[in-house]
Image (cartoon, rainbow, N blue to C red):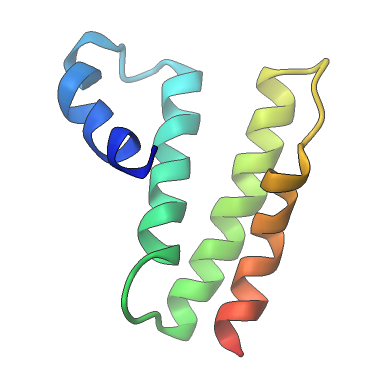
Length: 85
């Protein structure tokens, strides 16, 4: 799934309108993954990560009003504090 996520923008990115909110949500998730899986992270990146996760969850709830954040998505909230440790 990680490889699919990394290569999907290269495969179909030119077919998706750049202003599509769901596509932007997916790209936000990719940005989160880039920070989480990077070999080294600064404290500035931790702050950026916190903001991205918060924005991702808010955007998700806005785009899918009848849905709730699943536990797997909620766990992302704890990534920044765990990375600081």
